[in-house]
Length: 412
Ligand SMILES: Cc1cc2nc3c(=O)[nH]c(=O)nc-3n(C[C@H](O)[C@H](O)[C@H](O)COP(=O)(O)OP(=O)(O)OC[C@H]3O[C@@H](n4cnc5c(N)ncnc54)[C@H](O)[C@@H]3O)c2cc1C
Image 1 (cartoon, rainbow, N blue to C red):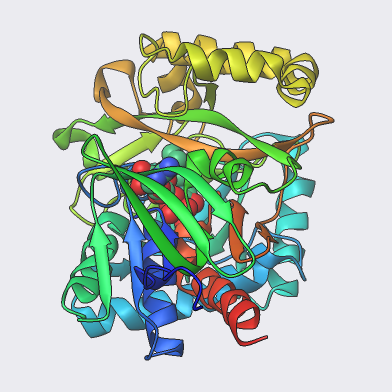
Image 2: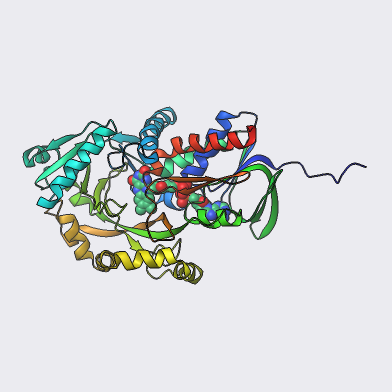
């Protein structure tokens, strides 16, 4: 007697998440294995609804990351792939260069450390004195600056839209919007995924699943039975915009020297591809994974964070910096003062609030932040567990790495 008939697979591989990493991974899988059918599952009604559509739009050169790290390697390769892709698809982008400005004597040695890091990563940079800085950014002021000519700008939402359009035109790829992954069973022969599609429970069966769920990647990994190694702690980054008549104060990208204890770069001034100049992002705790304003509170996320020892230890260690950031969030004049360290002419009236993004930052149980990109493999599942900045720049290279892991799982 033949056994009970199993339903055919919905697709060969399902990718959870229609942000830039998920979309790029679906594309990379279709390119690497043209015979495989790929399905992207995105819970929102549009792609790039979270980090990928709410960021600074900077194509990072890769100066910040330790040589040999996944960030250094994938940022460099991803940047080159991204520029090729933008050229090929006609997506507006520009290599503007950027300056990292030391405004206090104690920042000078850190600026020189950054120079060495950049050179170790094969990135050409130049140290500028105040006159050299003024030649590039006439309104910036500092003791010295590092010029990184290869930094650029793009609208990552436009990159996502182009990749999504390519998938939609591909008969062997599908993109389900409004399709939230509620359950995952990582079985021996297949992965069974419970999808909530507009309130309807739809079962999806695939040979392998990739988790690119960003702010929810730890939850999706837990649903697939992956041991809880790290958890996502959401950090909101708020932006302001320079009023149009003050945009002339910034020609390109002006950054502070980052505090090496944190993975965030400090509030900076960035001319975007549409001609505006935005300022930010700061880094304040968010009361929910998608809580874009102070008044947005998601009790389940707050309770989850309170139970997580890593978040409590992180808060104990960094409460002073956290309070400074919260104060700067509450007061536009403090925000303006941080920017005026870089461009002294900036006044509080020059700024108008301009939305926020939330970083998906993985934190270990001991309260330390996971600095590098992090991936894990389950039985028939591959998980992107930490993909904060520069993951948008690196997305096409991250996608290659993830696709290789999936191919190794399925091809053996
Ligand atoms: C404020 C800020 C500024 C940044 N600036 C830069 C920058 O200038 N340059 C740069 O390179 N990087 C930058 N980054 C980082 C970059 O934006 C992110 O690293 C990148 O967008 C991550 O992409 P992702 O696809 O992993 O995540 P996301 O874009 O968050 O996508 C994840 C997707 O998964 C979906 N999802 C979640 N759970 C489920 C589920 N259960 N079922 C179905 N779908 C689900 C979500 O709806 C979401 O669309 C910045 C990030 C922030 C927040």
